[in-house]
Image (cartoon, rainbow over all chains, first blue to last red; front, side, top):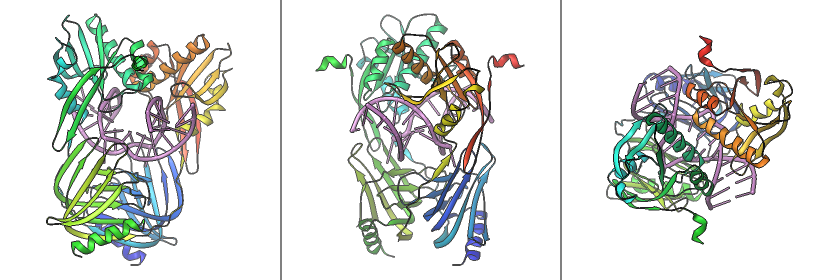
Length: 250
Length: 250
DNA sequence: GCGATCAGCGGCACG
DNA sequence: CGTGCCGTTGATCGC
């Protein structure tokens, strides 16, 4: 297929909201929030029906250049070959330009798909499950509210212990790191200020980095190890236990 | 092309480290760090030469299911159609299974590409540029070290002001948020502890969220607005000015 | 619209 | 390997 035909194919695919796949030798330039350039090589261009625009190399998961849904897509022939470009004004003015010097393959597809991915084991879901299992953390701990909106951020679980103290619980679906401790610290601080009382903070996560645990202890926050299991189509909390003073284990 | 031929094509492409593109009607299941399922629809499957495995719907930028480089890829025919699966042991045992009931297109490509993307305007680059422009923040501020490794994290710029006080500078290429303030706070705290002296902290970013600025001021950290420009092939700092007490502007 | 956070985040660099 | 953090992060949800 020559460049003229290819350009026509791209423009037709875009105007008909079809998905287009092109493979060939190209250079790619981007300018917007950042700028980038890559010289000639074989790549895959994927343009989706909503205008999402992706340039992939033959390795790695991530696209080397891209433009989000809603991009304005144009194609034209220039002396160097076929140019396919995508640009948008928001979030900022930016654009990609892919210049093919050789096209190995180009085709448009009319993809019918109204299904949505269902995911199990998200933090939200684990948090909801945990609402009913707070007794695993300690007796007398009762849930007050989940997804409680704070002026800044959202508290995963707000609870009350047997002494009627407020407890802020932050759930992580993967290892907790320094940022998680900082985050919980902010929530505990804000709630304490609002309610003008002492507030406890608990991190619940499958693991925690040593420095994060150290920081948590220093800040008076607690950590509980969360043991959970995901399968299709559900997630389940298997256990929950206090783990502190990791050095003491040895 | 029938399923048997397609399965053979996939296995051959994988064994030869080629890149494979398939388009067709399929269901996709994933189980591993989380679990997911999506019922039948038209999607694009992209398998790269390094084993990266991506399933795309016809909208949005992100793949709905994926597996990183190094995944073990297999293909076989079952009563329901063609199964293409990708699995790996690390970081955890996990796998995707794509079952095609209809194949619209399938082809392998031998992509030659040894080029690497060059990006301009990264935080690292802006930070390096700023090293020479510290006087724009305040007279007498001199750079000591860039990318200074701390026990936890890396300080973008460590500097010294005219009073010989240490100054930790955190550069952000986009709007600074609460997490950036927390991050800088951790650094300032650690440096102050190490050197046993008062340490200043400055956030340099193109903008800052109101709550982040508030928290910064409360924590004794400063904010400077960074005005920069990116183009191909470079980035440039255009200006730098103190912005505080935003409410006072009105 | 901005703000804050999650994500199966991915990728990178450093210890 | 883990730890930390950047990313043109993207995507979602609440204000």
